[in-house]
Length: 347
Length: 120
Image (cartoon, rainbow over all chains, first blue to last red; front, top):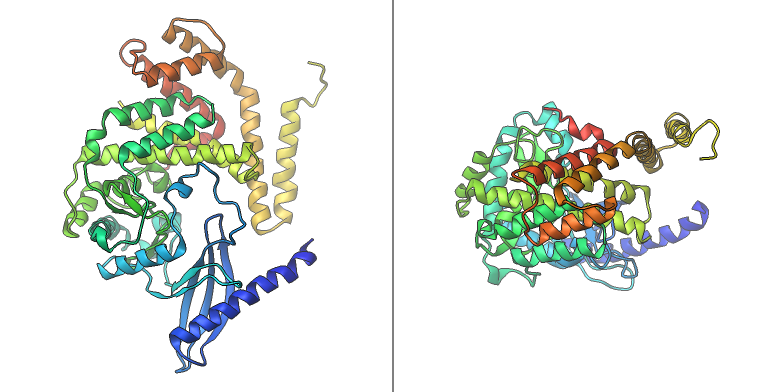
């Protein structure tokens, strides 16, 4: 089987290389070469490739291509959160550019790749040095001096991205808090398996919507430890803008606090590395609206609920056969962890 | 149940040990990762076979007290969910939340007991 697949893989890579080469020449000039092209990951919603552009003046740029998956691939199912909030790669690249303009640390976007018979659409950005794995950021000595800075820096970067004027943004999905709660209810109901803990949490959230705050801005959608590039000096970049949407800005701040993204370091509520007052100080320094502990708790409960819904979606994508892997099956059973965290947070 | 030794639980244990001791060390990358995930899934089955029955009984008993009615576990849970959604008062004081916490703690005890003992 491996033998039969190899020629096909090769030609996919060759076709991409040829499209990428043309686009790189257009952007960097004649004589630019593409070197070391390698696929880093392929998900249901995007592919990531790494390569270097060797430019004629002798410079060498480390780059990342993010492109849409081949169009005949199944996405994350009819009820996936990503299919409701997810954006295409050109929109994601545009969000990175806009975020960079208002001072959010992000990789620089070099050029966009148009869809043609050889490739799907994508964008090419700077490949940054640094760590993205949450566990390593929390444990390794190299980041000991970075960790105390991160909560403030993440607060500041969030405020800046939330401050991008809406009229400058590309078309995005928009979700108000009541619409998103209804969406989660519909998803859970469609699976016909009672989760009394999730019912309790949804009811709790519905009754307390006044605590959500009334901002409606660009929200990153997956703002958490694991999507940050961190160096020994602190936060270097905010990655993975593919769930960018119009929503409540505080949703990003609750999401960065949920227990699942503290990787066991539960005593530090912000990403396992910092405190809430540091996040708030950074958020205000970046020009963000002040939030209260109650606002944040609402969005932490909300985020925990959202992660629970994603786990349940995994369970059912295994059961229905749309993604029948041992991994989706076991992620499905992690729903219990989020239900547990929720009940710890609630009264 | 017409069964000799090894029992169902002992067979699951044997397959888990096979994955951990013989498959895992001889494969690499994604396959090694999936062998570990598969062994963890079997550990869930082992805990469920050992502890699940008693947990179900205790849960059903709590639900009968809380809802003041009889029924099997699935019916009782559906009824509980429906009443929570409708915002009905259920049980005295913190009885509902205590039941929910107890039940979810048991779920996690089966699915991933390490989650119940945080590292810091």
